[in-house]
Image (tube, rainbow, N blue to C red):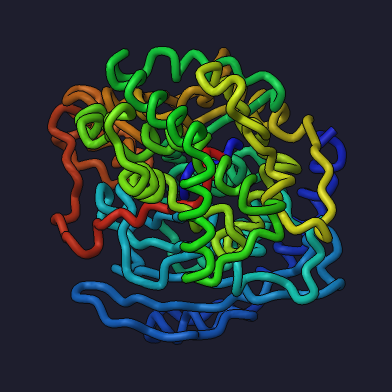
Length: 478
């Protein structure tokens, strides 16, 4: 995800799930493509599937596709939209990973870590309402967790006819949240879930876990250095805002959504510490300027490098409207205390409402995350959560309780929002790798006998294995 944004289903969801599943089952009666045809032809034989382009990549076929989805899965007759999908095809005899970023889909060939581990195929889905996968006109009330999970379910139901081996779902940050929510609503689809650095803001108004995190992360020296720069930026508000105004004029930035340059400036400053820890490490503390000697220009440049002054502008926010909408209606958003800024901050941590155009109506539904959290705690099966010790978003993680089976939570030491299985201590890394191989049905005999021998099955590929970090704004965007 980008820079952090701070971020009853019972009966209604159950009824909706049953009705949508029934509709999908009906659609699944369409003639299945024959096994002997080219994979592109088999994919395009799926009703509603169309090709955008094919990009060559050694050892794979990479297709960028559109798939026609109902705007409302409870009422599929009330309009459709096209949702982008990419397919990294290796072989139908291999297992498949269903990857979600929770944002736009990358149209460049990429492999997620689980895809590399199992040496499989990868299907990647763009989250609904991220352009161009947005209905026109956009009924924002149809952007919710259940509708998005139902998008995934329909895609899976069709592709499972072709990719018949095991399926795993995965994603990082909002993508990890998306994989988790999909499992909650369609627990029979996947054979395993690997969710990376997935925030779990169960009670939106209770954010003390984040305060405790910032009181203890890293070292006192580093924390003090960051806080001092943040405070100094508000002390020098006038000259720094003049520089921001000039930057906005040069770049054509406007501030209608957030409500003015002053609010945007403070949003950047207040996110400085959060975003540092989200994307940097303790070793980067030396790059933070000394508040006592820093020049205005150096201070401005540090703020822009860490948080980016474009983030709270209309131009920076436009792409992430769907995220902020969900943060303000279902996901929740952190609100941290920053006592070192008392007397200087005019607005505090601003809520998601400030980052969504006012003509889009928003109403927060507090029961949604409570439902998901309770389900994970008591029903998780073949689910793995990987968190980062120094990642602010991991301060409120998913937890496992009684009743879960074959489910795990790992924390990568000193890791930030990029934590993964590779960053775990040696024993945990091999255990986690062995589990992923087992869920996918491709664990070699040697690994079945001794998990310590577990290794990724695919050879490293610097191009395919590059991680595309989603950098949205503020701690609001995981």
